[in-house]
Length: 124
Image (cartoon, rainbow, N blue to C red; front, side, top):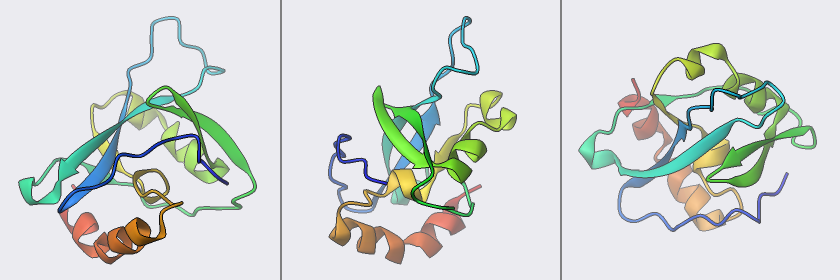
């Protein structure tokens, strides 16, 4: 599973990325891709978010979502979690490791993994 077409901005200081569901249009159908916006927030400012814990599943079995208008592949397990009805009725931000950490950038991935205790502790 590679998302090299999506370009992450670098994280600065104690920043993390969060995703926010873009509200679907009135003519949204279940065949449309779920769309998210990526937000950059400093953990020191105690942003409000939930952390999604899930099993990654088979990395070869993926489904597309839209991330800032770009097709982004996520595992089938994550796609199912992101399509849960509770997300559609809230305005919450989520921290999801497979999306919020640039998995193609080893130094960033190591740095963010070392912050996971803090990330989960600050989640609601």
